[in-house]
Length: 81
Image (tube, rainbow, N blue to C red; front, side, top):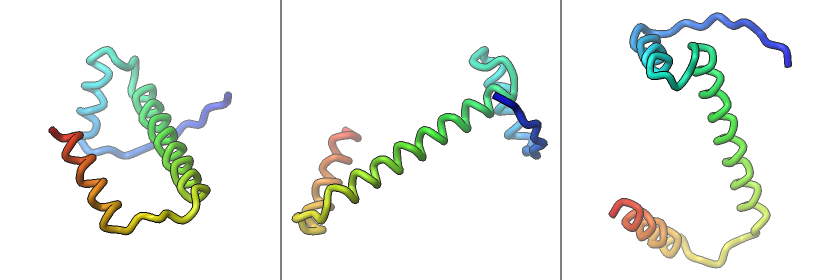
């Protein structure tokens, strides 16, 4: 796999955050941390696209908007105690 060098501009606070992640021992350098962030973002986007495809493939639902909303509120309450 080839690599490409990029130049990015960060705020001092962002740079401090990255340095803290490296200092914690979770990453060996800034590049490793940023590549990990990108990989995680790619995974989220892939999962979201898969969920959208699944939803579209499932067809038109039979529940009303009120029923869907009530279920979402119940799930939120259960998840948040």
